[in-house]
Image (cartoon, rainbow, N blue to C red; front, side, top):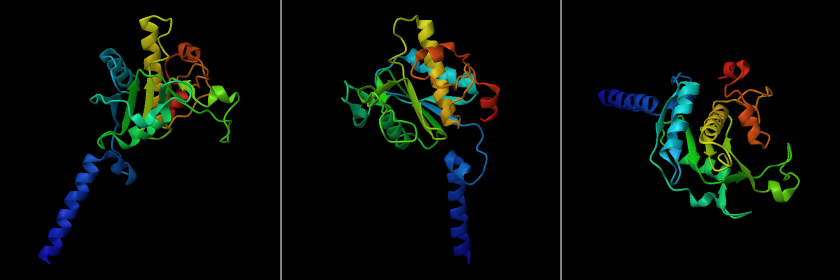
Length: 219
């Protein structure tokens, strides 16, 4: 009998440890884990200023604790030469999903390399026309709605603009992608940060930089 209770006690300790140190487990069993802990994962040789700006933008926008992880090299599996040497954003997203600490609820991958996705016709797996453009289409960021990761590239944000505009774009795109991970889809409100960029950086520039009331209510 003593042995039985000893086993139950040990299993109880293990269960408590899992709930304490793995936040996602607490979500699964319906225990409120509190505000999410977010990590910024720099890829390759990216400036401290860009990393700091992304960290600060998430903290300021959502009020969550954000930590910066040690830089890692860009995963070779994400490299592509479909149009010219760059990386696949969806592959980076997949890599991040399986290569981040369990203690983090959300991870934001940050790179200064160009990346892309394939764009399909709505509701199909048929590539949009013209195929040469959309088979490997360059983007600013990518996040899975309700997932655990998103990725942001600063590569397309600095052409012919001031540093002020560049960092404003970087911070807004980061918060947009984090919004997706928090469960938000694209918003029809033109000035909302969650409005679809529609393949143009001007949408980001013209945004208020904030969520609309409906989007805030859904977080």
